[in-house]
Length: 253
Image (cartoon, rainbow, N blue to C red; front, side, top):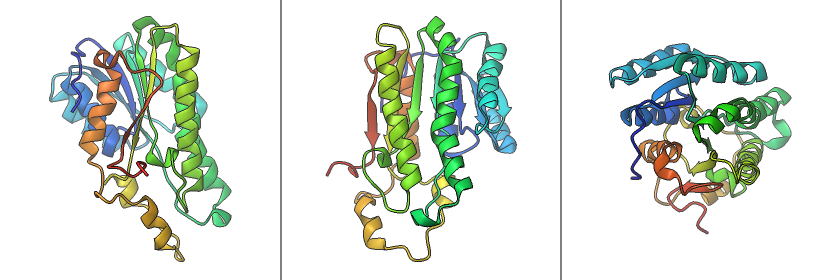
C-alpha cells in the first residue's frame, strides 16, 4: 500500500464520508494526522464517522448537505476553511449509480446522476481552488473502471465517470504551472452501500454483465481508500493528471 506523508496540521474535505469508501478514506487521512471536513447527506452516518476520527485525536467537522445544489458545494468548502483555517486537499468520493435500460431511465435519475457524479465535483473544485493554491494542495476524484469501458445498463454512470476522469486531466493541464495537483482513482466493483443497494432491470442480460465483472472478485475498499489518501498527501507529489486503476484487471483487456 502507498505510504502517506505526515498530515498533521493539514485539513481535508471528503465527500460521501458517511459510509463506504468516503468513510474509509477519511479514516486513512485521520490516521495520518489530518483534520477532516466530512460531507454527505446522511447526518447520522457522518456523526458515526466523526466519532471514529476524533478517537484518533484529530478534528472532524460534520457538514450534512445535498451536493446536487451548487450553493451547497460552495458552502461546504467555506465551512471547512472556516473551521480549520486552511484546505490542503479535496477528495470527491461521493457518487451514485442507477442501473436500468437506457430508454427507461427517468429524467430525475439522469439529472441526479449528473449532479452528484460530475457537477458537484466541479463546483467543489471551483470553490476549493483558491485555498488549494495557497497550500499547494491536491484534488482527488474517484471515478470508476466504468470511466474506461462501456457498461450495459449504466449509461449515465459511465458518462459521468468518464467526464470526471477527463475533467481531472483538463484541470491538470490548466494548472500545470501551479502547485496544486489533480488526480483520480478508478476502482472496480467494491462491496459498499452503493453496490449493495443497486437494483437491476428485470430483463437484464447477464452475459453482458459478465464482460465487466472482475475475474478476481471485488476490489477491497481499504485498498482504494489508501490510494485516495496517498494522492491527497505530499507523498504523491510526482502524481499529476493521472488516473490510478484499482480494478483487479477489469480494464486490462
